[in-house]
Length: 121
Image (cartoon, rainbow, N blue to C red; front, side, top):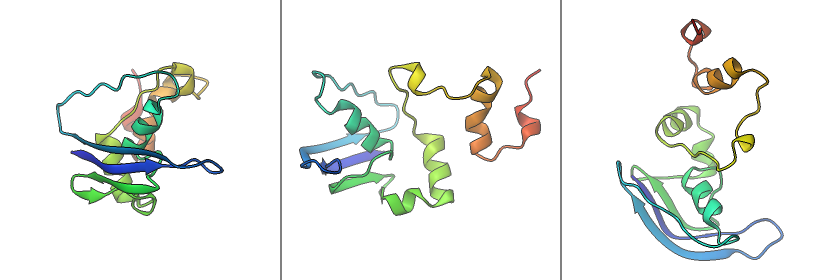
């Protein structure tokens, strides 16, 4: 379960945005964020995906605080990345390998699977 409790975030050289946001996303629940452009929807999703970290408030995943220090730990990060994902609206923001095979194999390779398991027949 992912939880945000009274989260705020601030970009460098900008005033923090206080969402006053509290949210609990349980397994198999579907949550929709709707709003106008510039309403911080993507920032909130990046907070939930540990691509950004709150400047105030708490983000917890399975009861553990999600912090930049914890995200740098390989064991925690691998588990989190296997269980939590974020797909961007524009595919060009996600694709960065020149070959489809390399793009498909990037995630499993990052998770440490041997190349033999990644071979495409």
